[in-house]
Length: 170
Image (cartoon, rainbow, N blue to C red):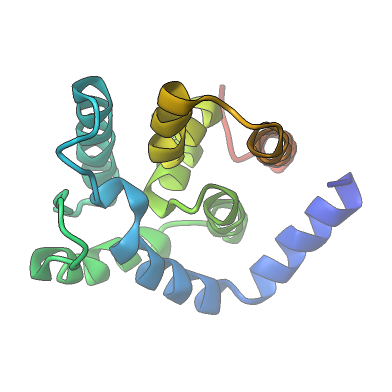
């Protein structure tokens, strides 16, 4: 992604902020961090629990992790609190969260990254924990490695754009 493509993505996201925030509100209910199998290694379970707890603190929500495929009613009830968080976000911040969440397939990991609670590397690992666990067990294919590298490169470019737009203090 070139600088002009990133800037264009930010501008498009800014124009559609309300629509994107609404999409994020729907996507967060099915966030990959909220669905963790008991079969997942204990260390990963603990990392994810810690991340969800941190996200709950930042967002002032009470999302819970489940093992099933159904979204718990308690998570559905968090949507209003989740959307309140975005009332305090500038347009660039909301756009950044949307763009990062699109790459990660995890709104919660994107929020934690923009709030600098975790690095983008950690956000990637959390968002792709299931795939990473499978790769640790069965190995990494060239195709998966190439796709992951592409995503990581996009995340680095988005982070650079975030610094350029003054989203981060560090």
